Image (cartoon, rainbow, N blue to C red):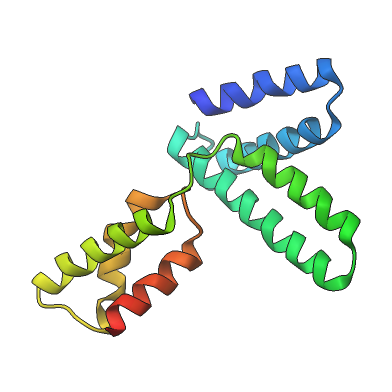
Length: 154
């Protein structure tokens, strides 16, 4: 079993003992999403910590988007619930990259790809291929894509 999944399960038990409803519900949801990912496909398998982080990053993104939608719809109480769940999920994700760190990683990848003779928008796939392993679970993918487009346009 992955170390992160094991930590989630022990935190679930702790949340039950402490009667922490937000943590309990969120960790249960996260473990369910992980289990669903493990049994999807042709054969059930154990996820690695990196794959668990990917599942948790997806769940965090869902919470961010839901909170925004609830805010726009005027359901501030529901939006706060989504943000509370997001805070629980972020405990298990790697520390998020600062804007400067992300900019350095993307700029370095753009330079590497440019050295290979690829430039402009057609180089986006090559740049993303270099950047994604370095930032996975540490920053929202749409933010990365936006920054890559900006730097490639220069």
